[in-house]
Amino acid sequence: MKLVDRSAFDVARDVNARRLSAREVTDAALAQADAVDGQVGAYLRVEYDLARAAAARVDARIASGERLALAGVPLAVKDNMCVIGTRTTCASRILEHWTAPYTATAVQRMLDAGCIPIGKANLDEFAMGSSCENSALGVTRNPYDLSRVPGGSSGGSAAAVAAREAAIGMGSDTGGSIREPGAFCNLVGFKPTYGRVSRYGLIAFASSLDQIGPLTRTVRDAAMAYDVMSGHDPMDSTSLPRAVEPASRALPTDLRGLRVGIVREFDLQALAPAMRTIYERAYAELESLGAALVDVSLPTVDYGVATYYLIAPAECSANLARFDGVRYGLRVDAADVGTMYEQTRAQGFGPEVKRRVLIGTYALSSGYYDAYYVRAQKARTLAAKDFAVAFGACDIIASPATSCPPFTLGAKSDPYSMYLMDYYTIPMSLAGVPALSVPCGWVREAQADLPLGLQLAAPHFAEPLLLGAAHAYEQATGYSARVSPAAAGSATGIEEPA
Image 1 (tube, rainbow, N blue to C red):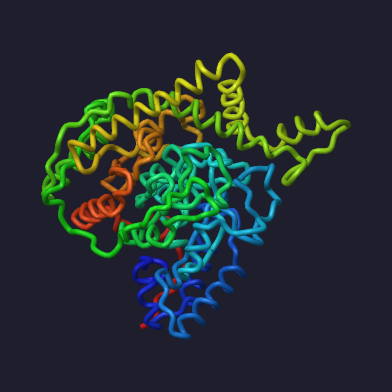
Image 2: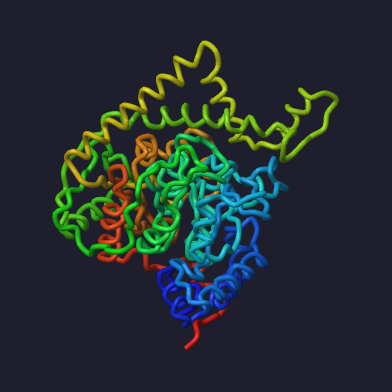
């Protein structure tokens, strides 16, 4: 087995036991990135010096007798999270040359636990997109089919993990931006409860929705990452001062006694026949593991997309006002300050960012605030109430993670069809509940096997229950074990030591 094929759990165990060194694992990950990233495009930058320096520190700490939860684990960091001394671009021209003066809390916690930062991963510009096609700085392809998208906005982090260029990817999820690329790249994509993971150092898109979480090849790895990155942070006013129950200690292998809600409004008949078959089988697999399937209703889910695409752009309009050419980032000089603002933002922002800023500014403008933004917030409240009622009848909720398999680059060029990609994931984001995508099978399309994800959601703060259910399903089905062609076809030839 090549070092790059090992899980985060296995790497940390063996580095702590000094059967492996962090430097060996790091060299293997860097070699894998050199071999495959020219095709995949997961990283905007591979941070060779940073990675090797981090590996040396980890090896020194292990030699001194420390035990680190994620010792030597290669990490891909989405490029909307600050890492001191590195460029943090949000895949945007407006921040293309900006260097972060500090490190995001969640990233720092991963580094303190022994992770090795291999590189900064590509994304949809300012995390606005569902396919990773909106990046102004590079193209990222799906490691399972290089003609297709990896999902977004955390597509670079997902592609890096699927292509074996990292064992854990850090992503951010606003309306599905961890879960969708997780589903598209045959990974576990996990969004914790809103406020469970600090947003300090995450460049904001929509502050009441953004949440950092991991993308991994196994549920155990996701639980390990969550245990490290979660917890209160006084630097983030939305961080919850509530103790975190560890999620990685006791992961079950069956679902006996668990009530799984099947959402009435998420009618599988709306899906293509091949996808419908996969999800019907997934529900049956949950039942075969001992779960009781129960019918639940989320009456407002059909308003989710419209609600989200008022609230998120409104918050984006406010958050992105800081990029004005004065304080940091791109500055396009002009004859007067007003023209400088206009030209800086016109040249610095891409089409999707401009679209959302315009939508949000309109929704917040005088005469429209009550009609649009306030009504959207009322709809959000109703969505949260729907989940509270549903979780009175079930322990977790199961649904599709996406409405289609990974699609070819450029296939969804109109905004409306792209926004509908978030149909299944947005309701959980609006309610702030934890949710994840776990591999659930494959559909055959154009001579390629394309991965799908099963979305599971749980009540607020029930991350151990959620991850436990996902682990039982993963272990019983084995869908996550398939290696992507991009990773399997690499020629690094780096084997683990005998």
